[in-house]
Length: 214
Image (tube, rainbow, N blue to C red; front, side):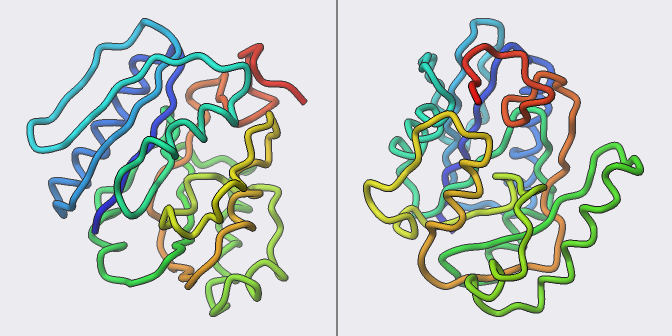
């Protein structure tokens, strides 16, 4: 598998370190052709490297988050792309599981890092794993709790020129709907979703970054 891991980070050095080290653990479990691209719009993190992984850091500032996502996407050189937020944790079996399947688009679930009553509803999404096509999946799907970390896809699965670059909290789901090609919903949990960042750049209610706009 040839895959680019795309990480955005902002003023959260401890969480970023935990995030990128979870990618290292998954790589050690199942080595793949991997690159990690990090965009950090602050100056507070230590650049972390691993000898057998290509890691590139950029420090670009944009007027909205959609442009940052697109910049990372455009820079990715591998066949697949996967966005991992800096306060989330990749499962150690991530590459091992994906490498067992051949698909243009992968969808999978996540485990709440700190399970509370408000998170239990996420586990209900497994009822859609029986759907065999993306169209069938979308007809039954509620995007309310969708996370960008639930999809890994080939760069070519996103039609050229359609990457959303506005500041819209559901851009991740917009991308998901635009993807074309073979679809595989995996009945597994491949990353841990947390709210440890508090100013999570993907949640309006937690966000404290003035670049995020309605």
